[in-house]
Length: 315
Image 1 (cartoon, rainbow, N blue to C red):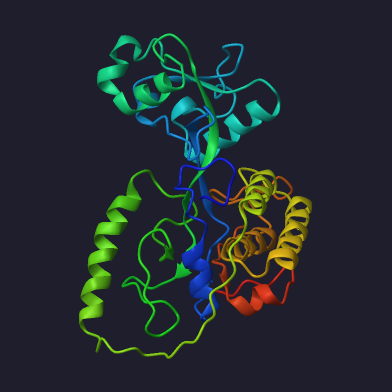
Image 2 (cartoon, rainbow, N blue to C red):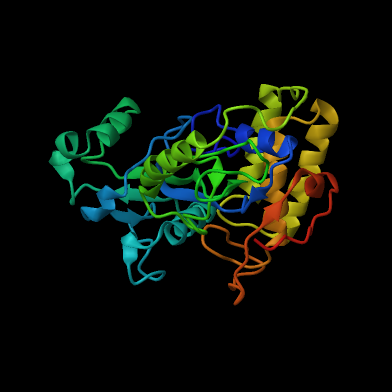
């Protein structure tokens, strides 16, 4: 999540696990699928605090700067539409200059401090009282459905390497994770992986000698985050992804083969190759969904080949 300018992830979450696994030979699955949370609180904090979806469950409304409902012409589910649909609506309102806000004044009002203390505290710390003022919001990179390819017991394609949690891609979340399923995933697959590991010898299966990659300087990381949000965020186009690959090339040429840029390469390459819209991956130039679903599987050699439209391997 930290690869994007607006993110709910810790600032140090920059795709290192995916990059490290790829460097030693593991395959990466479905890296293009990155979920944006539609209602991060837009108060200039990094990471951005969340205005929980429970607020909309209580009846809070998504509005623009003129007080007009955002979702009325977009989805019959209105403010309770799936995250990707709401995120695109919020993004469009912001891009058009109308602004986007979550109005909980009537739905929650004076009950804010007791019902939603975390959101209330974040707003008040920024000088915003959500009881009387709509909350400014923005989509934020929130969860990576892709990652290191694993089976249902945490095994990667590299013998002896195991992965579990958000860094792993076991197919559980498809193209668009349901809220809170990542907690259940951590509990279930953490236990499954631990049980599977008990049956192994505990001895290293592969001898590795890998040099540590260089670090990406702070100013370069800022440029990367801005570019990822602009060209590989809520909405994507082939031309934008090509521009982004050029920026990644320039960063690599200047700073070396850093983990954040390598992780971004996997995401951007896969997003460019997936010429359809599916789940959290929305291509403005390919808005239809393909009738033939497929997974993306990439290895380091695919990225090093530097071919934009790498043929994705069947899962």
